[in-house]
Length: 261
Image 1 (tube, helix red, strand yellow):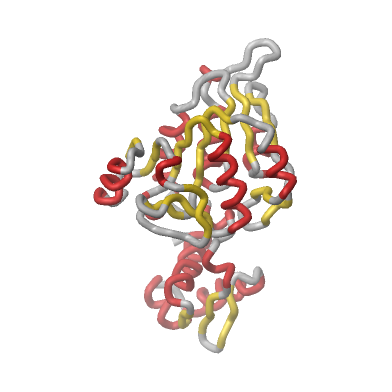
Image 2 (spheres, helix red, strand yellow):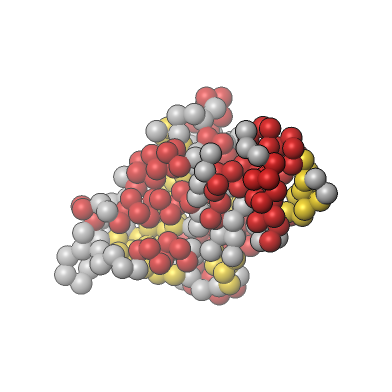
């Protein structure tokens, strides 16, 4: 197991158990206790957990992993989801992208589509985003016009939120929104861990003609702290083939078009 995968696993364990023991975790992951101690010390330095004698306990940040750790999770599934979702976009559209590793993958998939090339002064597509990492990646693409909301950046996700972001979005119309979520329940709707991000994402949903949620199967049938929108506000869901069939059927029964890849 690579170190970045091990760090993510440790944070996941803390999120589920609230505390972990060095010796127990070392045995579970088949690595030395010294390796686990170094990993926990590294995470504690970044204030992602609190070290204790013989282990560690969770703090609030452990439940909402920073983007650099989320990137290592469910990579093959997210790549398939991103490629399939990007196919929903058509030339000339105004496309919305909120923050997240899957939506960042959608941005990359859009950028390499040859059929979205620009002609003259007209861009192939216009992208509206509140995610700094997505804007940075697409800014060098000549076929993409980038519109970035204002707002205050959240270090965990690189997303901008607050009144400045609200002001910009309230003046725009989005043809197609790719919505990244932290959890998506067929009955309760789409969720984010952070209330500020949920608020901006909700406004993006309201400004969009069509909403496509992108989420791997681990996020389905779950709820998080702050609701983004109701399930009925999402037109389509792109997920992976490991998604729970019962959850997929529930989304379809709610009127959501589901594509599992």
